[in-house]
Amino acid sequence: MSISPEMQALKIRLKAMWMAGDYGHFATYLEPGALEFFARLQIAPGERVLDVACGAGQLALPAARVGAAVTGVDIASNLIEQAQSRAQAAGLPIRFEEADAEDLPYDDAAFDVVFSLIGAMFAPRPRQVAAELVRVCRPGGRIVMGNWTPGGFVGQMFKTHGKHVPPPAGMPPPVLWGDEATVRERLDDGIADLQLTRKMYPMKYPFPPPDVVEFFRTYYGPSNRAFAALDADKQEALRSDLEQLWSEHNQASRGGTEVEAEYLEVAAIRA
Image 1 (cartoon, rainbow, N blue to C red):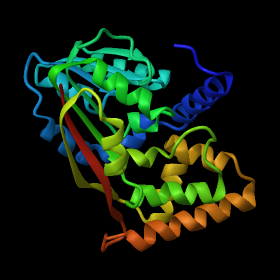
Image 2: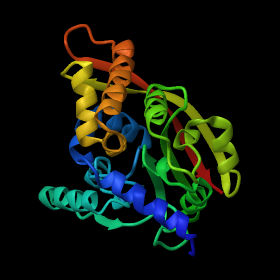
Image 3: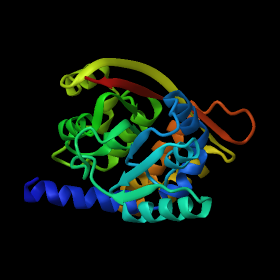
């Protein structure tokens, strides 16, 4: 699949962003919400499962534990290495590969379940992603995504990032994968049934909002790169705005930070 030099440069930049920080560590506090999403997948033993943008294997490992034949892909090679190490330590036979959600290296109809939790939504060419998710899923199989919504908390956080650091040119906002009308348009071919449900993702940290902002800056690629793009004064301005956002939405009563972040659960049946 040929792409323009500009798109190739953007992909290199995006890969570097997701390799920044330490998403494996960052995701530990997101595990409860991820497992809620996983439970609704109802993966059965023996099913062929593809986890697209699998990170460090947060959901690939649970899928393998229920007896599925699991493959996980991600563009970040360091996260694939983390996932492989975790699977080996747990004695789980999962195939992890570095691959692009826009160009999956698998045959047509190779999987019974194809899912992506807060992952494939960040690829720069959503039409390509949609086509690939459909292509590698067998007829009658399931395609499931969890995507941050534009108006939800994480959508507001990205908007705050964008106020200080312009988002990459040449790609639509990732949070459009959390907009119902946009998703229906993107998944308009090869789908027999499509269910869209808004869900709330619990984000809980045992430290106050200023420390949450620092945690994101250190470990979460998009936040890490946003801060790195700014000089000291502008970093403080971004930090102040993010602390205000977290504080305004904080539901914790004692010292910690608890926020409910809206996402769109996309559940499709392959025609």
